[in-house]
Amino acid sequence: MGNRRRVAERRKTTRPAVVGGMIAVFVGGVGFGAYALTDGGAAADERTSATSDHKAVKSGPLSAAEIRTASTRFLTAWQHGRIDEAAAATDDASAATTLLTGYTKDARLKDVTLAPGTPTGAKVPFTVKATVSYQKLSKPLAYSSSLTVVRRASDGKPLVNWHSEVVHPDLKDGDTLVTGESGTPPIKALDRDGGELTAAKYPSLGPVLDGLRQKYGKTAGGKAGIELRVVRGNASQKAQLSDKTLVELSHGTPGAVKTTLNPALQTAAEQQVGKRQQASVVVVRPSTGEILAVANSGHGFNVAFQGSLAPGSTMKIVTSTMLFEKKLITPDASHPCPKTYKLAGWTFHNDDNSEIKKGTFKQSFGASCNNAFIDFAPKLSDDDLTKEAQQVYGLGMDNWSIGVPSFDGSVPVESGAQMGASLIGQGGVRMNPLNMASVAATVESGAFHQPYLVSPAVDNRTLAKAARTMSSQTQSQLKDVLKFTADYGTAAKAMAGMSGDYGAKTGSAEVDGQKKPNGWFTAYKGDLAAAGVVQAGGHGGDTAGPIVAALLKTGG
Image (cartoon, rainbow, N blue to C red; front, side):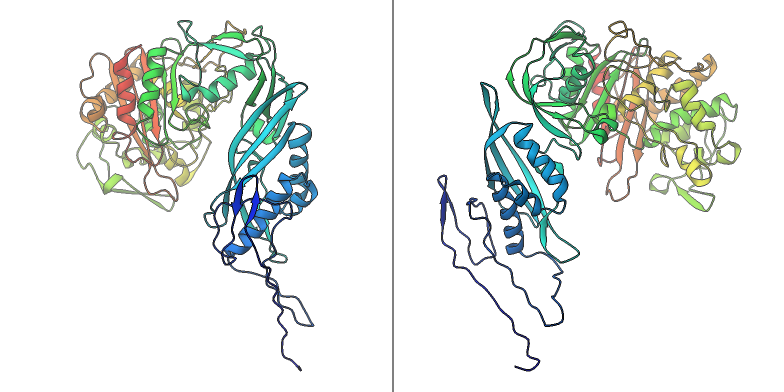
């Protein structure tokens, strides 16, 4: 045929397959929904073309048929225990082999049944049903997961993109599943009044209870039970993720661990964050550092304690402390806030391009006008803000010990425009609601008291201390600008009706690729301080503000 290319196409006739009561029908080799997995593996549905010189490498978007074929090949092999075949259907056969082998050997899971669902693009959801067996004990396990099919660059072959969460959504890469006597006995966590804290009653406390068990399980007097659990690997341990129990085959005897949580405030906190997506809040007692409530609207990662987010203008509390201590400004001193300010090649803008031509520093603080702070940058050293955060507020020292994993904030030394951005809580500054609640608490009490969830008397641990306290004059100046903000500034709407000794600060932190900023709010009222964030929520006064204010009004 000379140079004419020969193209061979192979088609298989498919018929409905009945497996375990499920019927699978592939229509036209393209569209597909839920389907059963047969022992024969995936049907071949690939077209290839070649010349005598080379074999073409497939490229471009994956077809529905390719996604179906790759996902079915993997799931079928996994379901029937053909580990090498399942691993070969992924883009990391070595890692897949290790985890899938452990699924049977270490996790002791058998009778695995996988049921694929309807894909969304290259992502294929599926459900898992299995039995956890250990000696004479057994319990069912059921959960949902998903996989994503990708095209291998070297030859264009569709493969499952391997990550540990394919096997179970609670797994991070490097984690394992293990069934046996738990390494840590269970605990019975108690609130400050002796009531039991459970994830069923307080959904936000799931990660907190895991952390309490990991730290105090072996010393609280309990006895280990038999369970299937996620054992964290090195990367997860560095991220301060705790081991997680998935199935209890036999109950251990729990030891009791008393916390500082206030049941009324914890209930209110759960209710408040439930009104918004991606909301987190923490309440602390300024005079002692006791954590009275912690809640997240998402019940997985504990953003309230472990989040690392730019705090936006709530950071202006720390910045103002530094400016007052350096005698660079006073609340009632005349201090305009220009519409723009140029620093080291950057042009900084205020929210909505606002400006204050003739006003005081207090008015700029209350309006959260950025450039009233950034224009101090030329008068500051690169490490001034870092020192202020560490020495007065105890932030960024990586030495808090609250009783469960937490992030202590970070205020790195920066220069130029990045240093200017740090003054308004952007740049490299990172905080979470626990950190910012502590900032408000430090202003209210005049001294830093490291927040804690479990009394240090329980395990004789040492709480972090700040190098120095602010002067009474600086505290008075801070309370002045925070009270003004709560009465007349950006926090006034949320704090309306508040009485007594109170103050507040709002914040909005821009995040690349996010349409709306993260909304922040921190405030105190008497011997209560709280901070919250609503990610991608918008302005802090409208989003996190009502959450924080409601909790301060609840009292505790």
